[in-house]
Every structure is written in C-alpha cells, then in structure tokens.
Image 1: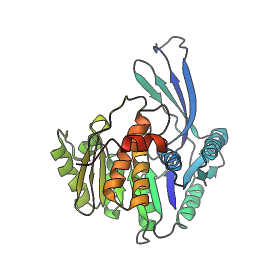
Image 2: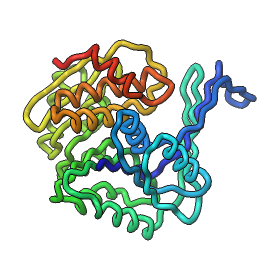
Image 3: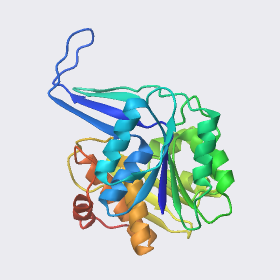
Image 4: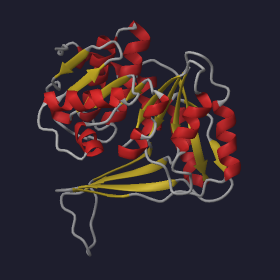
Length: 303
C-alpha cells in the first residue's frame, strides 16, 4: 500500500481577479475551494492514475472535516488523526497580474496526537511506500522526518521525501528511496546557482553520496533529470503546453513516478510518467487525470 503524510493540510481558497489592488475592494471572477497539502495532492493524483493510497496526518475542526469530505469524493482513503482543538488552516491563493498567497498557521499538534500518528506508521509493512511531503508546522519538532525514518528503518519500506533544504538534507543518512528537489532547491542546499544540466547532475550525485538512493530533479519548463541507484541518468525536456496552474505540479510528478514504477518496475518509465503527470497538472486548472498524463507521455522520451 501507498501512504502519504501531510502534517499541516489546508483548504485552499483559490481566487482569480483581473487585477488585485491592495487597500481596496476587489471582486473575483473565479473561485474554488480545494483540500490541499503536498501529501494530499499526491494521494489525489495517485487515485486519478488508478492507484489507491491512504492519506495520513492531522486535521482539526470544520475545515478538517471538509478536507476529509473532499478526499472521500475523490475516492481517496484517509486515516487522519483528529485534533481536539483548533481548525485545519485556510490558505488564500490570489491569482491576478501577480500571484499572492496567504497561508494559515494551522492547529497545535499535541504529543498525544503525534503518538497516534507513530502508532499508525508502525503498522506499515515491507514493500509499502510512504510519502513524506511538505513543511513542518511550528508545533511539531523540526526533526519529525528523521524520527519517522529512524522508526521505520530496516523494515523494507520505500520512503519518498519531498521537502526543502535542511528538511531534505537531514534525512539523507536514513537512505530515502527517492527525493525530489527542484533545481533551485538543489542549488540552495549547496549555496550555489546551478547554471546547466552538468552542474545539476554533479550536485545531485552529491546527494546520492550523502545517502539518497534515487534523486529526481524537477526543472519546471526545462523538464526533469533522474539519477537512479543503479548509476543511470535520465533527462527529459518538458512536454509542450500552456502553463495554467503550477500548484501541485511537483506533487503530481511524485505520484506519477510512483505509479510508473509500481506498474512497470522500470526507473525510466517511472521517470517519464512523473514528467508527464507533473506537466499535465501544470497545464490544467485541476490535478492531472490518467488520460491527460497518458496523452503527454506519448509525446516524450528520455535522453
């Protein structure tokens, strides 16, 4: 089974305006309210691609109930720890001539709730896949990723980590199965600006030397690069299309990679499925469907 963890899920209130003016009344021309969070996005896209998963994490209040209701509509199973106080956060995403985001803080996650999540994770079995994705709220210890990976070490569980800078660097000694920085995040880890594919590959290899088994680097409109634990390097330009919404594209790439690997056992096929699924989400108002991902998959190949 595939499991995803979202520590601080949200309801994303997405609005579009012709123009946003601070200090004035603004009227929207488009509104949508979607359950969000990186792990949740991965679970939704996996379901769209035909793969079941269980979404784990913490929810609270009426917003938490709406997140779970929406997941049920998608057919996604969830087993969130329900917090006794507070509400799951609401994030406001304003899309006008520029994009502006206002992210909520989220509820307090108690030690009792953390223990409940650990008890759920203890039930994972050999060959299960666990996706740890996103930031850590300030009410959780900042080494929560390491604690989880240490707890599950040696049990044959494939752990995928999609996080930024120190969160990612700190888990490398636990040998995550897959990490997915983007090219800018990869440069930030080493305090450099990466200017070409050769430099990106060289620094991705440094992450492997530090413990990562497979490194998938997303590069937005420039495509992606994969370094595998078998010593292979694959590159693929981005499929052609019009960028509509970049939110969730990276999460979709992770879901596509897991889908492709589970279906074929091939890193190359998993890589291409990841690229096509991530792009399909970027080219749509909503997260990628199987038909959209397959259509783009037919247009790309690995180098």
